[in-house]
Image 1 (spheres, rainbow, N blue to C red):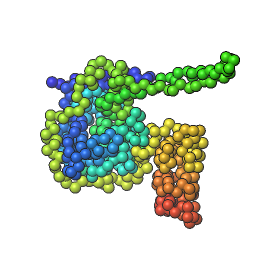
Image 2: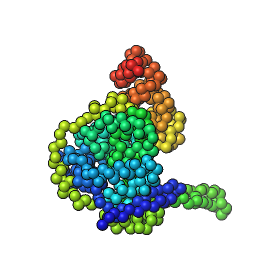
Image 3: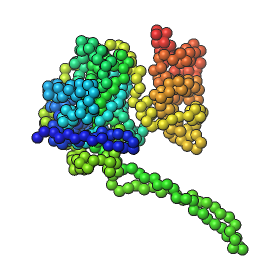
Image 4: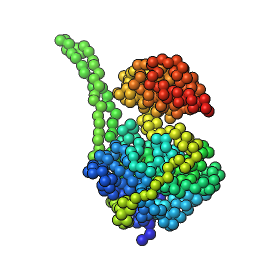
Length: 468
């Protein structure tokens, strides 16, 4: 039975959202639970697989009984042997259609037919071709390690916040990198409307289905890496409702003669209403109320199975014990690619940008004085160190000039020495800042004891700045 793919665009608070339903999909691309396969002996870890065809591609080890606030251990699967030609052609055809001007619904139709049954959303968004920690993504997952930002619910942003994933995990090993192919993509990326196609994996990370060589070219040419994003909508959510507070209650006091002597307005307690059941379903980027779903798509969500194993699971499972030959590292890529990756926004910056809407100069001055509150309100967090870290990340992502001024003010204050090392490493990424060069050079030449913690970073920064 062939796959039944239907798409519909809905209006959500003035914003258009593309929804796509898949019935009788081939389940050739998706994720599934694989049980306890990390061989660590821990009963609290579970493994999820991202698979393409009969090949496990990405292993995600989920600690703490798959706690959604815990980051995952991610690695490229040693069992990958290369997906078949049919899937390869479907990815290539969709990529070409999108760049020929087709809509997301039409251009991605071949890929949607390969997915698991369910409801998806698709949109365009820019990605940073890194692992979220400044390492170029293609060769960054050879060894299983904890990857910041892979938790479904960020502790910094809170679980109710919507966000757009922006970091990558490869679906091809770096063995596939070919300098000749890269020469062609160097020219092609200049004309492309869509640079890659990604499938959301977990947290801020998505699996790159198409566009690996293009990612190398985009970084080298300083071209935004714009991707068509596919997200599966599975998670139910419930919104807490805060009705408007009722008007103050008037309390009167009568004197001995029976006349009113005083009137006091007493504020009524603010009500909180938690509705029974769920408000709707969501993916990372969008929350959709139940009444906004087309009826047929809502039926698929309510009656379908959010988690199931594909029919080829036994083959996927058998390949997990494969021992892969020596993996190729990012060192085969040009040094400029690796250096530019280090300077891209990382996961901490993105989380802070979503967690904070704005920071005024008065609020920053309060933090510099060691205060975590402004006008009776917590600025960022009750914890001072956490407040400095989050504020630095937010400013570095949103306002470089204010970040440099704020970082220098922190490092120049001996009372804030506990934050000096972190802030210095953050500031060192601004390799072209003349203001930071002057500050760090003064710290190196002056020998003041208050700069003790930042001296190693300062010396490295000054040396690199002179080399440039």
